[in-house]
Length: 79
Image 1 (cartoon, rainbow, N blue to C red):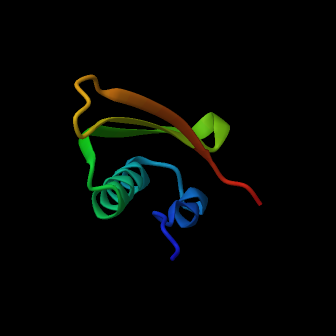
Image 2: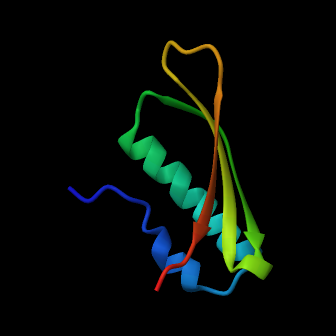
């Protein structure tokens, strides 16, 4: 099965708040659908127009874990 959020399509869109929102929602959706053990606290996506990329910060915990984990990613288009 192909599990993914399909983010590559959005990385070629104009960089801006609308795309930040869509990427954030896609990340939330894929975590909710494919990782039921994850307790999602927040997903923040910020455009980095000078770098043609987005930074994403995901804060979550896994069932039975007491400390949240913060995952920071840079989403960049690759040709």
